[in-house]
Image (cartoon, rainbow, N blue to C red; front, side, top):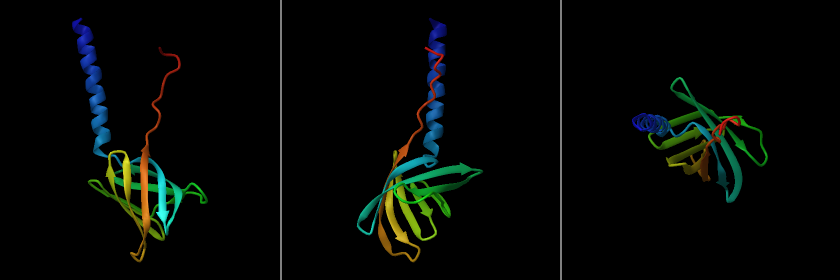
Length: 129
């Protein structure tokens, strides 16, 4: 019985450790949603990676455009700044959501965006129980 309790405690501690790592940086991953620009909505997907302390990513309009590398990605606490050649996205992370405004490079507002984080499906070993 004592061994089972120790094993359970270790398993729970392992899960808690994994969750705290994810909570430190919620930005990397795939985000999907919509951009509402000039009064009409388009589906949008953003993929963000973190490597060696900096972010990089790609943006894709799911409707009409191949992927485009982001010119810049910055995060400060919950605030996120994404740059494309002609557009700037400024948003805020709240849980699994990232939402904010879209402006052109000159600073004029052109709309808004709302994204939801798409978490990968956990791997399941087919040979296990």
